[in-house]
Length: 212
Image (cartoon, rainbow, N blue to C red; front, top):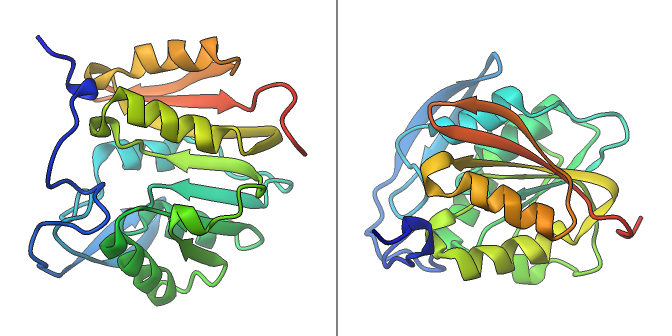
């Protein structure tokens, strides 16, 4: 049986211009005791609800420390991680990136509507490659295929500052354990922080020698 994580797909949320016709909707999500309202749409990841993987990440990833000010939401979608982290840690500067133009518009709208003024939303290509992050949060787009996924993670995990860390949530049957091994082989220290409903929450430390 083919590995689903190795199979690229068409007409998916990780396309720059979603093929799906627009179908706006509003949802409310209780995240960490905060009732947040979001605008969503077809053609983006999990448009009808806060998906279980993201919910696990937000519930179990450690809160930002006082020195973790530079935060990246990698693959922000319509912005639930961005908004929660920005509101919970107003001293942080949260950068939300996604290749999906529809998602970028929604994340911008939702950050503004929820009062998250410490958020910047940008296409990945617009981010200075020398910019460094203390924390990266990500529900990775596994279905883009392993080569593309590995390229994505190499690009951004190497932008962790010295002492920085990333928190990734991945389903077990979509390769969480093999991804952890690959990251370890790259020189990252990887720790499984939580498991729930077949999801794994991984903490990935910056490699030794990362920039400040």
